[in-house]
Length: 217
Image (cartoon, rainbow, N blue to C red; front, side, top):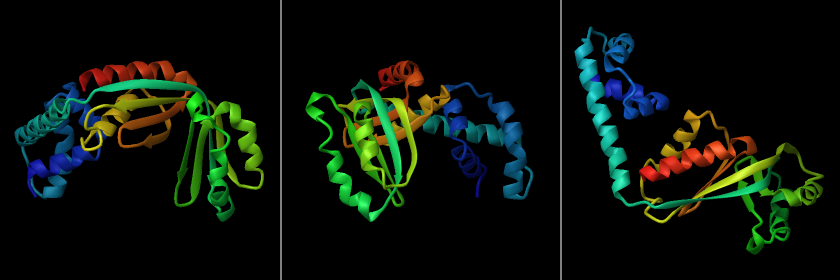
């Protein structure tokens, strides 16, 4: 294994560091001094700071080209926001699965209601307009509700370009929000949409972060 391969693997394990390198806010000399002991441990021999710095620069160029390539695909986006959302997480049971279809009768999607149901291996997530909160609670009386949260916001990025086949777009969105310490409660995606469920207090900041990001796309 070469110095370049080891450095790349170390950086890949630290996504925030990778993003900082891409932003150009990392001093390669200082980072090299920090990485050298780990690189030497893996290689089982001494290495120079200059070899690590060269590996960092090459990887930074590679990452930058990847970001530029995603922008060349001509991805256009728009952001929509829905407020007054609640989120239920429930233990998956055969009885609950039989009742799933009944939740769709509660909402009127043509009038702006929101509903998304995600079925996992062990849990079911129901994100729905807040006004149906009591009806959902009634349906779940016999179920094991792990968590429920109210007063949430749904932000949806609608992509007009080749979002589905463009690597790294979702990563860029999530990382941009993480840099601003924004917690994402649910992630929902389709062929042309990426939907994030967040707390209301983070909605304005998230909207601004996403607008800044899609300008780069």
